[in-house]
Image (cartoon, rainbow, N blue to C red; front, side, top):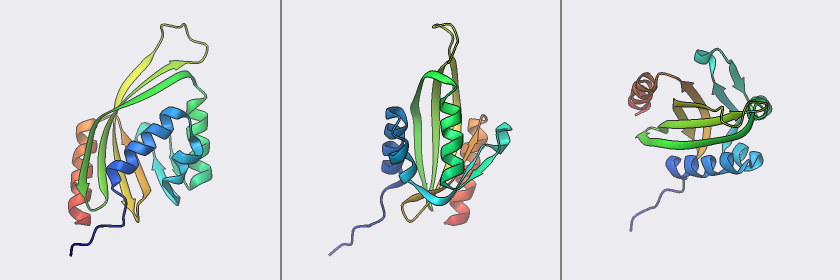
Length: 142
């Protein structure tokens, strides 16, 4: 008789997370983060945010800059050891901007999971470096 894992699949968690972000459901979104999780945007010059209140505050402030905001996952890689790499295209229409002014960028994200919760996320503009960092981390965590 085989045992099925009771730990949720990290890729499924991230899919549900992205759906919550698109729907603007901040409570569901935050429920997927460990209470003391870290959201690391330091290599973008935006800082590091620890814990639900800090992460939520950053996300709300970021979201308030856009009249419309969308994200489209382009690549999900479960690398093992609780490490997932995500390439994400984000499109935003700034508040107060002309209707045809949009910002569109792709980012690399490294997510770390423990016990079915996101415990750390690091974002990078350098997608290849983010992917390589995720691969190294997954190998270390084995």
